[in-house]
Image 1: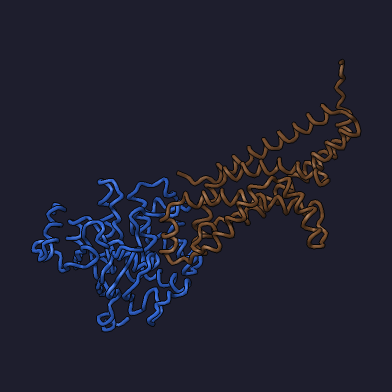
Image 2: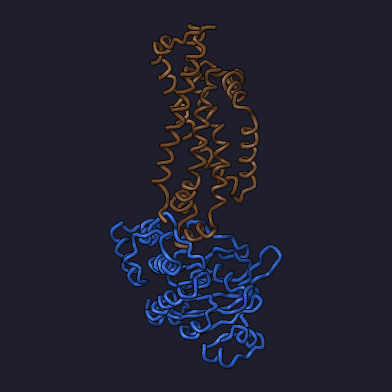
Length: 260
Length: 221
């Protein structure tokens, strides 16, 4: 992609996103755009819709209104007023455009660290085994897990599992990485090893959308911080501005309670 | 009184008993393999979003699991051929019945194993771009089958013992020959005790073998 094109087309564009779970409206019109290389953190109290928004981008949740585009490509639904869902094979292809890292790691327990990373490369990207292994080893080295490539998830600590999960997602070379509270299930002493890996990826220019409760981390790593409240984006801006000088009362309260 | 044990008539026909045992094992293996396929399909149907599929699968389980196996055998061997005007061999009829019967039990085994999986496993498969079917094949099945293995072993042993009912429609299995030798020689105690021991030993060996398999296949942790 040329420089110009990347300036014009956002890598990720969320437009008027509405999501209902049977009776509860969780997202009430969310708009968000990210350029290539952007690191955006989403903060907010639980139930504000942060995770749901992320899951909509990865199409793990359907949504009733609005559009999500990745590199200008409409995600999940065919154009037209009746909003027909795209074919499953098409959805799978689009999912691979984003890389998701989950709160609970969700590694494949029956595969080694290496096997976890190569599965998508051989089955989705259809790469030959040796090529897949080379890519996987490169990323495992990047997250500091190369020496544990033969270990099974059950033999790794939470922090190590999460680093493998990050390698599994980035190895697919997604256009956007999605991180869903990836340190919330970790023991406090394991949080930093994961955050450092994410920071390094951000330094590489990876486009990243993070849902996080780590305020200090969000402050340090983000180009922009988004505060969500009751299914809407209430405020967003550069971390210094947003954290030092919150405009809305809710954000001020939230930051106070987050003891930042 | 003064009954003299005489195993000679039993040993004389021991090759018949062995062939019967072999047939029983072969029928059980075939039935569990086909039963696994039925059970897997029905288990996925039971947890699917499609209400019709769920209905079909649960009706199958309800009917088959709540009927005595003996009735099912009589039904497939005598009633079905007459109604449809087709001939079915004894062994074929029995194996088919046993597979359908096993399938109903295995549906519940697999359904339980599916429900026990963490929800995130499927999502992780999907999130790297696998389709639903690829996720089932490469992620869900390998984990779920390992979890189901102990229950599967249990079912296989049970199924092997159930092959003794094949004698009811004159399939020449171990029980069939036991009855034959018993009738011909009147060596009641000798015949049935030898055959019992053959069933027990075989089941014990199957269980031991499957436990080894279970350990070998266990996910390292």
